[in-house]
Amino acid sequence: MSEPQDNPTDNPTPPQSFADLGVDQRIVDALAAVGIVHPFPVQALTLPVALSGHDIIGQAKTGTGKTLGFGIPLLQAVTGPSEPGFDALEAPGAPQALVVTPTRELAIQVATDLETAAKNRDVRIMQVYGGRAYEPQIAQLTNGVEVVVGTPGRIIDLLNQHHLTLAHARTVVLDEADEMLDQGFLPDVEKILAATPAGRHTMLFSATMPGPVVAMARRHMTQATHIRAQDPDDQGATVTAIEQLVYRVHALNKTEIVARILQARERGRVIIFARTKRTAAKLSDELASRGFAAAAIHGDLGQGAREQALRAFRKGKVDVLVATDVAARGIDVDDVTHVINYQCPEDEKTYLHRTGRTGRAGNKGHAVTFVDWDDLPRWSLIDRALEIGQPEPPETYHTSEHLYKDLDIPQDAGGVLPRSARTAAGLEAETWEDLGETGGRNRSGQKGGRPRGSAPVGGRAKSRDRARGGAASQGNDAARDRSARTSAGGDSAPKRQRNRRRTRGGKPMGRASRT
Image 1 (cartoon, rainbow, N blue to C red):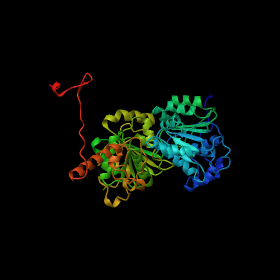
Image 2 (image 1 turned 135 degrees about the vertical axis):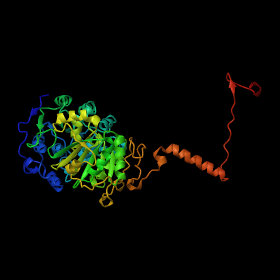
Image 3 (image 1 turned 30 degrees about the horizontal axis):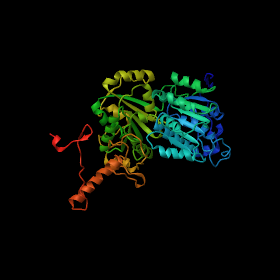
Image 4 (image 1 turned 90 degrees about the vertical axis):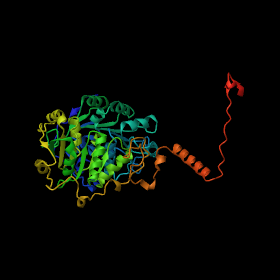
């Protein structure tokens, strides 16, 4: 395979509209309907190359619009059931395009963006990831789909079970390839690529380009064009639209500071990142008790509970989302005004992907990072790598004047949200969907099942006993019924006592021998 070629024009002047780039008018109209008219730099650079069928290695900061950069060419390359040429395909109904993502949340976000762009097209887009039952996914594949968006593990499972075929997937996208490397997914990605046609159109997108990712691109891509998309006024590692605020904070005072930040003037949705699942759950409960519309998302939650929290966050029923790094990629909400690193990130890559949840789609944002005394050496490395310029964060408490000034917090803000400001409906207002989950824990600590206090879709509530295992609970119910009939003098016959015979050497023993 040839070496990737650098695009000689990294920062051209963006065209006036998507139509100027040769985008299908149906897609242009669908994007315009949601207010997307002018392409971002990564899209302006990617679309002319991708629409002509050339392989692409796209490198851009998180939150700069990579999804439409590969999504539009992908959609224009597929044919829906009611569109001309569908019956002439080699295998009508087999997947024509595949997008591989490292996380479930990112798969949901990518599929949602593709559905938005394809609103005026007859294109079936399917999400494939773990935590959901296999049967609905198998049924959907049987009925036929044009685009599959999923995570490596579930894609390989369906391939091995012969429910998914990629022999006709002429377009393949690897999104956030560096995260796949970090999570150890590259061997799985190699298997997936091996199941696709050799002459496919391949697009790889990543915020960073470590050596193993570049090596994989060389093996599986043909004359790939390496596109680095960057705004001329945004030359640093971080996005200039995001204000970086760093404070040295005592662990016992963090919740009080968060409560004040959440009362900042003109703040919208907020994402708070914690390092551990326990911290995320505890902080979410604490904020909810203080009157904030907060929800948590972490690995111990079942997929239904995680999607319930994300839906509530996107719809505004919850405006504070406390998450572990499972959500650092995949939450694409334009009006996230603040990201709070409740605990110092592990490294600069984690910092970039966390803070990239704000300042998206050209909006302004604030990234607030709490640094414990023990985390100062780690923060020093992050600060040096990203050139943030704050190696010695100021010591900060919930009474510090600079905190209120930096974030435009009212001086009378306290640790509890006033009742007059509690306008969000809360997590309980969002329905919980039974996904037939195969693992994970809900908010009450039980595996799978419905989170405590949430409403099931369509009234399909399961009893707690059945959720824990139907056969055992049914046996317990039967035993209770027999006991009740006996105590009430019912017609339940006494159980016949079994006669037991003792033997020795295979011969029956008499009563006299039992001494």
